[in-house]
Image (cartoon, rainbow, N blue to C red; front, top):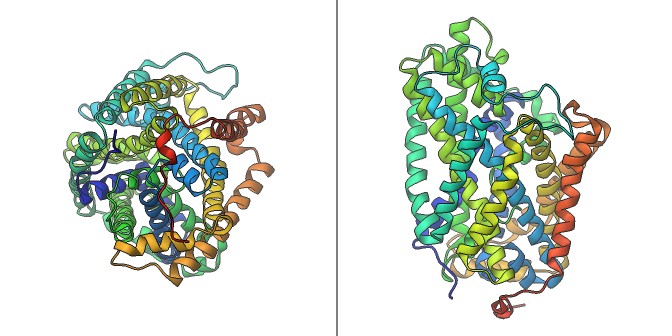
Length: 501
């Protein structure tokens, strides 16, 4: 059976943008920007986008298109010794999607809660006690029972995701992306326009954009900017390689990479406008400073925003709009994580798509159940920190160093990209990927390593972090090495076109 292809260029671009735009764009970027210099943060942020984001997306797009396979297969075709990096990225995507789905289940529940503002006035107590019934402490041996409020929407999320993936690239992923991304933009614009027209919104926008120029000399700000760009664009997880492997041969990958990267950053800035305008409104009504309300992550989305929604005109409507945005942004990202695994499994084991979707999706659903227990919140926090910090970052370093330095694929990849691209890759691309990006990644990686070795993450018990943090990273690496030693069942993997060396 021939490899699937996207039905149109814009179908691919929207799917790639949908993968990049996720929960982090809405709940992470605004807070990261605010606490790292406000308006001044946009300078290192744009610098990171121009020196790492654009080039890295362009690299992964051309790898997928040239070698026409999943991440493991593409790396295998570069050099057999590199296959393990692809399976490492497979493991990263698998682990992330198991807890990502749970958060989407929460968002789905909160759409329903919005109809009656069920979270009340104490939104923190509602989330942690009434809804999730979180245990008082984290424990390796005690996760409590399954919390059905979280479990049932989790199953619904997986049914939706697997149904989309089951239909394939063109009829499933592309069709949904063409509907979901425009819908997301329209709904989020409604939320942002309402937020910036509220009394007090200028307080939040001033806090968000007011530049702290002295922060530009702080290296932590630059590390934060590069980290935000890197994680936001879904890099080194196999997603962009997998998606671009479904492109027709005569495709302008560089132009598409620029569109995807700039669209992602544009949405992040839009999120900054909306979130901080809403925070300004709440500060105005409550008589407190914006800095006392600013938060990121789960706390922003499920604690602070419901408090703000309570005070809005037509709160039920805007509650539904906001949590629908979270759900849509998350679903398109979850689909892409699953596709990394589906594509790799069909090629490695010779499965058809339907078998791969049911097998991998079923396994992921079972693993996700652990996050729907009363102790699941603690597990999610630790796994997320370590998989991103010590899974994704080393994966990116290996990808760049092996592809460009060890196996010397810079020239053939640039030639492939420039063959059909309006924007030609040249010296800028070489400096960006060959030097700036790996240096920044190593700095961020070692900084994170030092922090997590010197201090137990999150104040959790040492054994809890050891088992579910460091243990998860080791498990992913062992899995990657072992699977890479198995033979390929689909013999078409050896049909590799000749490269111009």
